[in-house]
Amino acid sequence: MTTIALPDSRTGTPPAISAVGLRKAYGDKVVLNGVDLHIPEGTVFALLGPNGAGKTTTVEILSTLVPADGGQARVAGCDLVREAPGVRDAIGVTGQFAAVDQLLTAEENLLLMADLEHLPRAEGRRRAAALLDRFELTEAARKPVSTFSGGMRRKLDLAMTLVGDPRIIFLDEPTTGLDPRSRRTMWEIIRGLVVEQGVTVFLTTQYLEEADQLADRIAVLDRGRIVAEGTAEELKRLIPGGHIRLTFPDAAQLDTAAQRFAGSVRDDEELSLRIASDGGIATLRAVLDVLDAERLRAESLTQHTPDLDDVFLTLTGRSDSPKDSSR
Ligand SMILES: Nc1ncnc2c1ncn2[C@@H]1O[C@H](COP(=O)(O)OP(=O)(O)OP(=O)(O)O)[C@@H](O)[C@H]1O
Ligand SMILES: [Mg+2]
Image (cartoon, rainbow, N blue to C red; front, side, top):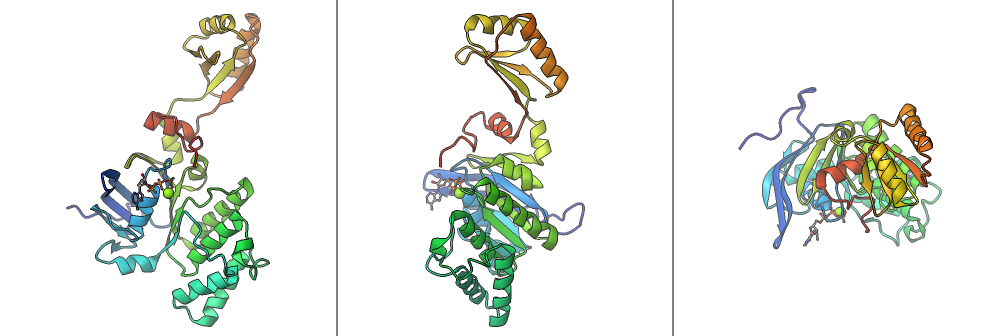
């Protein structure tokens, strides 16, 4: 077996997380079918995939909550199986569903975590206060969590993960269900952890935008396999370019337009036409000029720049992109 904790070629330090050939099945259902990972220290890694792709299972295995059926992994320099306590000491896990105690206050939840981490009482109080402040929960600190909004719970959940000062943090869908503003707040907090404290973040998400915003590297997980890995830019390069989409009121106009725009792709049901575009003004103007010259009355025109949704569609050949799938 090859050694899997290869030093990072740039820094010479071992990766925060490395895995080779992780496999897991529940009964007949193969959930992970040979997953390899290499995550350098102090970076953000996003595991992207739709419902049921195996994201939570991967987090559970790497955080020693469930055993893998096959493969090997090292987290924080410790073997997942033989040195599990070392792994647990180094990591923090914020699960997919908030693990906060509803009946306790935010402050009590944090102090409970401090106790579980065996911190001296004064140190526990200091850390709890600092975290409440950082997550803007100080005002609500003495209120029971049952009165918190989803976003506040999510923030408290992450704060609890940070009580033990972990070097590596697993965040399983940290912003699912949050409104756009709370999502941005969470992103800022996560960025801060990496930039200010050099923490390594392993996050899972169904949101391509989230991976694009936060991650140094992104892996796309589909049916138990990583089907692509790279930076957001690298993934975007894999996919076709942008396009302009026109819709027409009737088939005759669609016919004319399809003939005029060489290489365009028509959809007869939707009476729409896709025209390759670099997203530039000149291309847009040329399209409008043709419509005018042919006296075509397009009902709508939309410009589409490639995003990670397109990556998903291209890689998996299915349109059950994270945005579309129901939870
Ligand atoms: N304890 C378990 N027993 C049986 N099957 C399980 C168990 N945990 C997960 N599975 C199955 O493994 C597959 C992957 O589940 P997992 O929770 O890892 O997906 P996910 O990518 O996190 O999905 P989601 O986006 O919905 O959270 C699913 O088909 C699920 O039903
Ligand atoms: Mg999950």
